[in-house]
Length: 125
Image (cartoon, rainbow, N blue to C red; front, side, top):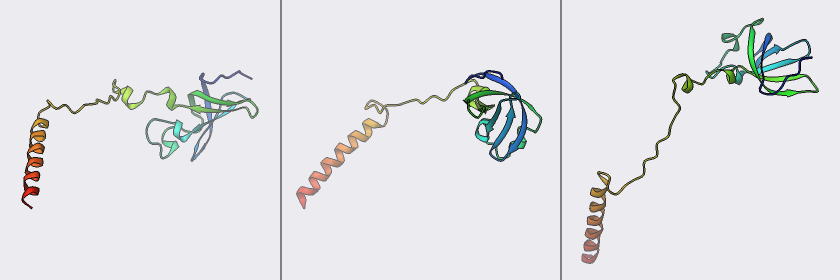
């Protein structure tokens, strides 16, 4: 039996496909499952669109159950995400409201005018 480690990359043969994932034989002793969520970064409606019975697949070992000799596997972990394919990562730009920013001074002045106007109207009532 080959000693697998979490994080290692291995090859195996697809031996079964179910709606929830694909079974992969790593060697005679170790079987693994690629859950449907670990097939691809894309939405996977039908696993058959991505892999077929008998395919040789390269997978990353996510976890191992030594007692049952079963492994959780991933193809997705070896593929770049869509953002990585485009060569950029999402960045969030935080813009703080600044009183000197255009538009804010006008609103501030108007608010002061409205408050004064409201005070004057209250004194007449």
